[in-house]
Amino acid sequence: MTESPSRVAIVTGAGRGIGAAIARKLAGDGFAVGLLDLDEAGAKAGAEAIVADGGRATGVGLDVSDAEQVEAAVATVAEQLGAPTVLINNAGITRDNLLFKMSEADWDSVMGVHLRGSFLMSRAVQKHQTEQGWGRIVNLSSTSALGNRGQANYSTAKAGLQGFTKTLAIELGKFGVTVNAIAPGFIATDMTAATAERIGMSFEDFKKAAAQEIPVRRVGEPEDIANVVSFLVSEGAGFVSGQVIYVAGGPKA
Ligand code: NAP
Image (cartoon, rainbow, N blue to C red; front, side):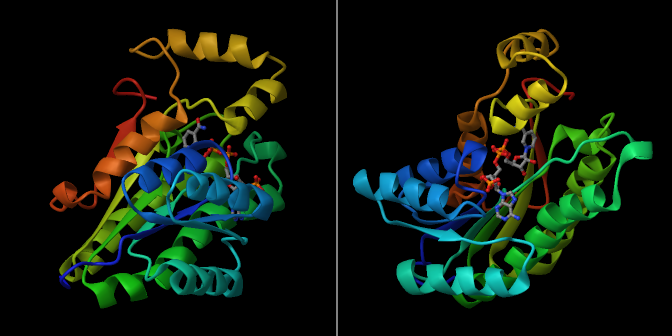
């Protein structure tokens, strides 16, 4: 490891939801944070809030499934904040449908954001991590990786991210880089609110019904995920690699 590796983190999909909470938490942990999102205004607003609180941050618009945009965004963060050594692959979308109604576009767009996006981002950031001799990657999987009706595309992508995590852990370990995945259960964000709307339930009723099925009897909040990310990127987590941590209020989805 170099004397003191650069403490710069990149969070994708940081414009709102879980990504925004992760960006805030890492800023509180002392990282300079690059907030990347399709929604450039959301990313910039999140970065401005961190700066207003005394942190260092920058917001950059990009589509994580576009190789050129990924390279450009990582270069912008490196120029403005320093070499990124922490990467949180959080950007995500759902395009739920039963198999017989699922279009090729529904399949390809979900694979594009989760799998191609995490691959492109990791490939771009590992250059900085291996140069620094230290790094952390955390990929956002899901309990849906275990199977979920109406999510053939999403569950496949989230299971794929678990294999990606384990392989990167094997390849990058000798450079001081750990790679882990977090598989959240139900977290209250726009994503789950959209699911409630799609099935014709109020979000409050949807959350109450979900909580009944969760051992700790509540749904998760974005901060529940941010707290685990904070541990996984810490110095103390250096011997934890290639793991999938289910953060779901219980052992099952
Ligand atoms: P969210 O509220 O929908 O936020 C997702 C963010 O990702 C949005 O800001 C979105 O930008 C951004 N994004 C989407 N496509 C992108 C792309 N191509 N390039 C860059 N950014 C893109 O979702 P969330 O609930 O916070 O979920 C965050 C992650 O956790 C996702 O990977 C999700 O699959 C995973 N997860 C969530 C839950 C849950 O219950 N919420 C459970 C398990 C796993 P726009 O604002 O422009 O759309």
